[in-house]
Each structure stands twice: as structure tokens, then as C-alpha cells.
Image (tube, rainbow, N blue to C red; front, side, top):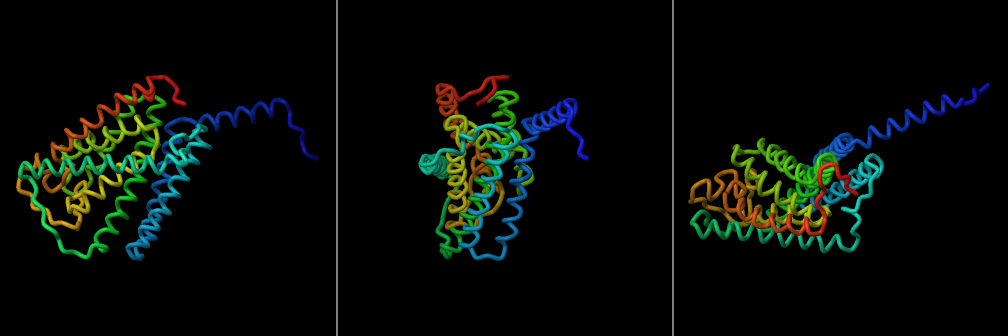
Length: 295
């Protein structure tokens, strides 16, 4: 015969369930689970795309990015148990991606132009097969934009923000982003610090201003793509772009072998862009103070 559930058993089961729910609702837990899921997706699709042609790799990268977004949504919806307004933009998603892409393009073009003006770079057309250069750069940039933004600004930023507010989230994720790039080729302490400022602060400020992932993905994607097409190393990774770059100035101006991101020029320009974004974010009420529970 089956035993009837007693009130004590029901209370115990209810308490155990509520404890389990509270455990997964902890910001650190849903952040770690989401990050692990996205990393596994990225590794899986990277392995699958190895033997594909250039265009096939782009398609598979898009599919992998879509799966990463689903993992992100599941972590937020069923573990964090919170709405996901940063994804639910419907028609606005396209315009936000385009807006972010324009900002990223302007940022890199202006930074590069100033370095050229100060005799740091000179460019020559590489006479390469255009499609053999463009598609691999797009594939790499797409993967980096989706995976890094979902992890750093999507999961990590919002988990830390929930525990300590927007300013602590901006500070810590910027530092983490810089540290994460110290393992790249030709990386230096200055290179990591410059990444923390120009990428961590700028992309964090962009997220606070727009409060969606599409804007920062567009910004990040066009940032890396433009660098790659110009033939400038992207965070230390050499890029066989459409141009060959002759570096003639000091490392502080040009970034040296690490590339544009270790130049003082984009560090300054990124702050000139990020500060107005933070001002707009504050005016919109997007900044969350310490111990204020974000919606």
C-alpha cells in the first residue's frame, strides 16, 4: 500500500524545493550555469565548423550563436526566474544591431585615421582574393561578438549588478574582460588594461544605455570586422586583411604587435564615447544602485 503524504512530509518537500529554487536563483549560480552552457555550445560549433568552407562556417556560426541565445534565455527564464527584456525587442533588434554597428565602425575608423595622421600606420592594398579574406573574418567576428557579449555583458554584468549595482558591475566586468585577453598573443599588462577601458567600459556603458544585447553585439562585431579587414591585429591575433599595414610609430601610438586596441588613441576615444552613454543611461534611469533589485 502507498503511504499517504503527511503534512510534515509535504512541508519538508516544499522546503526542499524552495531551497533548490533559491539556490538556482542566486546570481552567481545562474551566471555560472549560463556561462558554462554558452562555452560548451561555442566549443561544439567551433569543432563542427572546422571542415566547412568559408560560407558554411558563417552559417554554422550563426546557428551556434542562435543556440547560445537560447541557452542564455533558458538560464535567465528558468534559473534566474526573471524577464528577459534585453532579448525581447522583436522589430527593434535589427535597428539596434545596425545602430551598434555604426558606432563600432565610426570608433575604429576614427581611431585608425588619427593614428595614420600621426604617422603611426600606412596601408597598402593586399591584392588578395576578397572572398577568401572577408568570410573568415566575418565568421571569427560573429562568434566573438555573440559569445563574449552574452557572457560578459549579458550574464556576468547583470549577475554582479543584481548583487552590487551598476557601477560595481561595470568596474568588475571591465577588469575581467581585460584579464581575459592577457592570454592572447603579444598581450601585455598595458594591452589588458587598454582592453578593460576601451572594450570593457565602452561595451558596458553601451549596455547600460541601450539595455539590450543587440546594440552591443552589433558594436562588437563591426569593431572586430573593421579591424580585421584593415589588416590590423585584433587583440593580438594577426589578421590577413584586405590591406597590409606598415607600423611606423611608437607602440603607445600604434599598439605594436597587439594591434590597435593597445594604442592610446582608441582608449581616449572610447572614453569620449562611453561617458555620454553613461550620462544618457543615468537620465533614462537605467543605472541600478547598490542593493536595488533590478527588474
